[in-house]
Length: 639
Image (tube, rainbow, N blue to C red; front, side, top):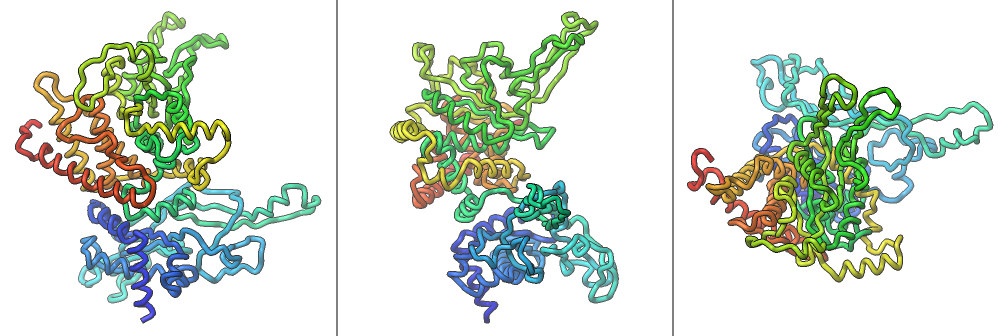
């Protein structure tokens, strides 16, 4: 009866905390995946204070007997899978691997592990807090989270199914999970691993010493021999986000949109007040987590062009953002964006190739400022690089004392950020051209260059993302107290917290769920269809699909997920459609300029209203795909 009561409490907690919905979403990912799994791994975020308040016995198990507590949640999750038919391939309860992630531990001495205090408790298998200094670390390697074994005797009933499942438990070695001497309990034949079902995870080993041990290196040993002992710690699936963000992620786990909405709302509160420029800040965060050189054969980049009349604030915001990543480069007008040639100053006769800002920003952001500050030939070169993602340097032989000409091609693996001042005198006096509904007059910018940027964002005074009064108040307060933290969000979520979050999100490997993949292709084909005419052809290039994929991946990464859901594709489609509307005007899939942030995010109620609004947008997107997408009557066989 006690165990049954704890299971009921576990189910109630999962439901109240949003963990149940997250578990269901994770199950959908496994169910849609084409990969075979012996073990289905689920992370459950636990707030011990909330659990203890709900059920003291379950809370006690989580704090002092976490392995038994994991078994309680394992049973609850297995019943949920079978009752709701969430994973068709799941057969046994042992295939569910529950990992409990605690938001915190009670601030009591017994929960802290001091390396200098003896005797240490080596017997209890529970959570501890420990602080120390890392003196050595290994590279990240793989370990086996779970494996499936089968009886080698084909006549044995256990030569099929999932009766023999090996799951890694804390403290176990690799040989405890994978060995070749396991025997069948029924016929005593040897067991063989079915390797295609093996599930791997990341592992890193670090050695830690107590902070007090540093005294030995600070001259306090009086030249006497000394020794200190390090503690070896195994990190499984390393995580690098702050406790505040981890708690926020837990509180918003019931929604696929709330976490990123709050991130955009509070981001860069040192530069602009929370709730302002949310659309732009979301796009900047997505560009920061998506841009990397993790894939050598692909260009994971999100280029952003901003239309604004407040260049000073936008410049500050973008400059603040590039400083959050290791390779954020602010291009100076006096330097070159791309590689240039010069004679070697050491007199060797060799050609010196100067890298330029773009190559220095490899895996990061190259902020090139106002487009108007660059000459026509440089803009043409920029357009070529945005389209091809490489730059070729031609070396004339005669000029540099060589018999033959040479050329070198460099990959450009960075995202470009820029803005256009629509309030400058040249643009104010320019003759306006006739535009379609929703279309921006960008006639003074080369059309091909505008097209080459993945996202076009409007931050004009007439746009919803440019609230005037809060920005003025913020500017006045910062003038009085330049170093002050004006908002609670600045104190709770520091710049360092954002740096850790972005670094962690950038390294997440994501894959598309089946639903998300279908929706991405469906939207691309439908949008391409309605923006095609018989004279000029389609206004959407093949790179449009690439940007949709990158936007979807970026939103998933920003949500700290390993899979792209259809909710991520919706945000990608809304951002991309907003950009297309600014470039070409509105179409059948009519998206409001403030579709991603239709309400100001004051509290939980407004977040709920936004979720409802985005759910309606998702239904409209699905209807748009059903009407104009592949398989509809308006599509010809060629299309």
